[in-house]
Amino acid sequence: MSYKVLSIEDQAAAVSHVEVELEFEGESGPITKKASVRAIYQDSENNAMVRTEPNGAWKIVQNSIMDILYAIRL
Image 1 (tube, rainbow, N blue to C red):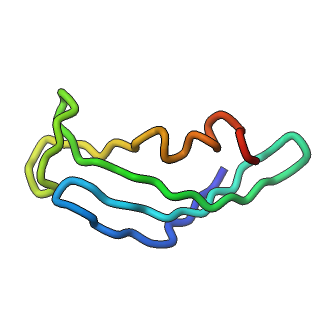
Image 2: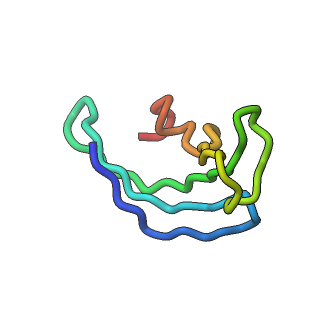
Image 3: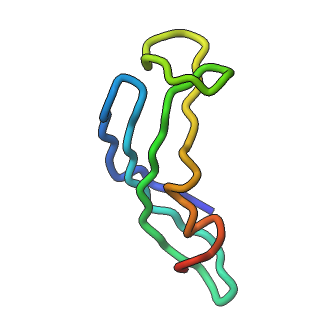
């Protein structure tokens, strides 16, 4: 599997929208798929934090890549 970041748009103090191109192996060969990923900077209790605060982590909103995770539209 490989990926390429196409663009990043900071939408709020804790939210970024990332466009990526993913390449992975499917049943009949390689698949290339563009995806929109929403990421939120959060503390250990999943509360949103300003991206410049220490001890936070970027977490992907899973429903933004649900079709890839569950092979809905591959």
